[in-house]
Length: 190
Image (cartoon, rainbow, N blue to C red; front, side, top):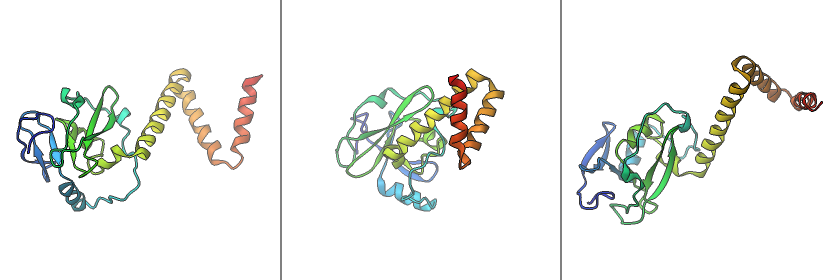
């Protein structure tokens, strides 16, 4: 079986995370994870494959130093069934990289270093999340909230921002909290 990125190089048996069988490219150091191997690996860890997608670590806020390989931008065919691999986007603070998946046989391709980053993001046990619209939407919402919070701290300073965040939580939890928000808004209209 040939590497989907280095088209003339044979994949060889390898292991990811000490236990996950993969077919690895000795040239580009990418790894093909067959769906049956991945499902068995998930089962050994008690992973609920039907769990609703959940963002555990926000990729855009993760302190990860990673530089994707140049092959990450190359289109590829599934080494098993020859379908085009679809790309799932992972946005880190400084760079974006793509994990590929076969829409037909459901295998995954990780370029060099991507598997280790996915482990740090706690996505290694749920690669399917990367290709899930709900998970991608959660990432965007949480990223917006993090940027908004950082901007608030930047504009108001940490002390006042902390009080604003605390007041926001109190008003959100109160059944008449919208009255308090309306009061504050009126104060700034005057």
